[in-house]
Image (cartoon, rainbow, N blue to C red; front, side, top):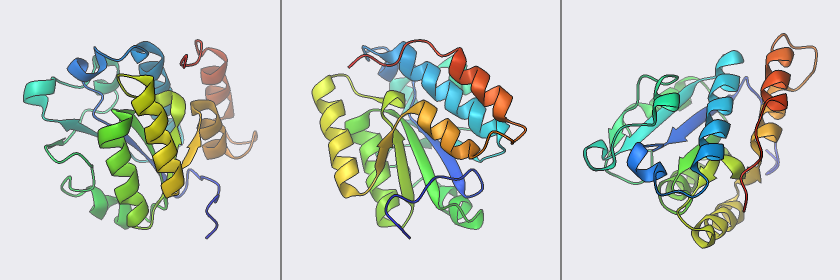
Length: 190
C-alpha cells in the first residue's frame, strides 16, 4: 500500500475528536472549524460512511457542541487522550474493514495528534483536513500537523477530502456534496 493511497468512501471512516463546548470556546477559529466538521459529517453520512465521535472528560470540558451533537448522538467518553482506547472503536474499525480514517477535532497537538499516531501505528491510513482540526494557538496547531504528517498522515482540506470520498461526478451524492462546497464560508484563517 502506497503512503499516498487515495481515500475511498468504501473503506473510509470519519472520527470526530472531542469537539466540546469548553474546549472550542477558547479556539480562535472555532466557527469555521465547526462548520467544516459538520460538512464532513454530513458528507460522510451522505456516502453511508461510518462516523464516530468522542468526548474527553465531559464533566470538566462540557458536552459536544450542539451542531455536531445533533448529527452524532452516540459519543463515548474517555480520559485517555487518544481515541483508540475507546471501547469497541477499534473492533468496529476492523469489523468494517476500514483502511482510511479521517480525523478531525480538537486539540490538534493533544488528542487529535495522539489519535492519529496511534491509528498509524495500528496500520490505518490517516487523513487530517487542516481546516477541521484546531488548537488554542497557531504554534501548537502547526507543529502538530507537521508531526502527524512526518509520522505518515496525509494533511489535506475539508473540500479535498469530500471530493476524494466522492471519487466521481456520476455518483448520486455529487449534487449534495457540490452544494456543501459551494455554500462553505471562508476557510480557517492561519
